[in-house]
Length: 398
Picture 1 (tube, helix red, strand yellow):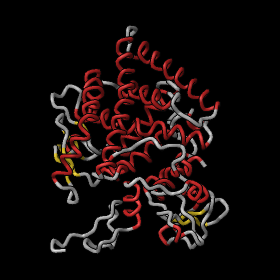
Picture 2: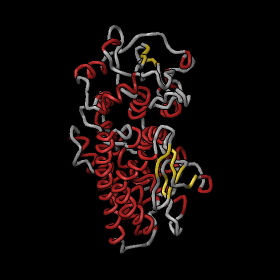
Picture 3: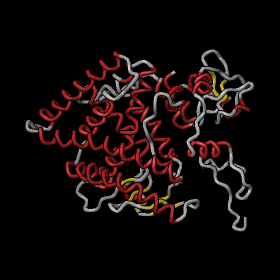
Picture 4: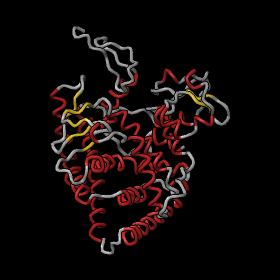
């Protein structure tokens, strides 16, 4: 209290009234602490909450929004949804934490409520069509490339000279960036004809398999594109506003001590080395172009061997997509680039795809270490694949 410090909620929404020194935390932070300690809530209570609609008064902020508007990905990407109408005309109010005291007449849908409401609506939206006047017709590969360009315009709109280059990285905006990137990943997938052929459950499973892989590589690709493959410096985006060099960087925040920042730096180092040596350096050396990057993302999206719970129809669509994108890349090399001997380049690209999976596994170890030492909330620094029994996945699939 002598320092006049103010309690900062983990969500960083700047609306938590609890003051430092009151020996209290908001419900969100109490849940986060319980999760750090390994506590879990019962699956049946959460699963039942998914299927129950909540009737209450619509919020004033959404009263002027039509039901059709609320269902569009563009609107959901840019607005916080706290109340919306179902097809039956009922109002759904989304709460936060599944506590027994709130189960008298209201039910909880899932944690990170507004974010997952938006995510679910986007995943279930109709296909996004690309302009028909494009000169090439590479089917799946063209869809991927157009989606990549849209992803870049939505997230990586700053020029190279507008990016802050530093090895002292402000971490406060990273959770917000991850949330936006997650929603834009779902939006990106809507450009895939094959993805939009899947049922809602399969869409959620394929998204869950793919999104952490995209998050592991997209900033690397856009870093090379933004700062140049021929540049002697190695600048890598931390989010869409900050970048660090090959020495990486320590995170800074008013709530993180120097000792904690150094610990975070140390536990991230093995994963960062994999990222830099096995992904960034090879991609920069190859100067991976848009179509090759689209091929890499298609490989990651439709390599579904490790996906449990998928329907046979989804597996068939995935296999066909892999064949189609391989044929598209062959046509691109031989017709557009007039390169018949591209086997070495393709093998290097496939190696990078494999290293992205290794990088994801290394980040999983980081999440475990961070949870053990209570250095940070896992969801703030790491984006990971969810288990099918995870309440968030139950919500997305049903």
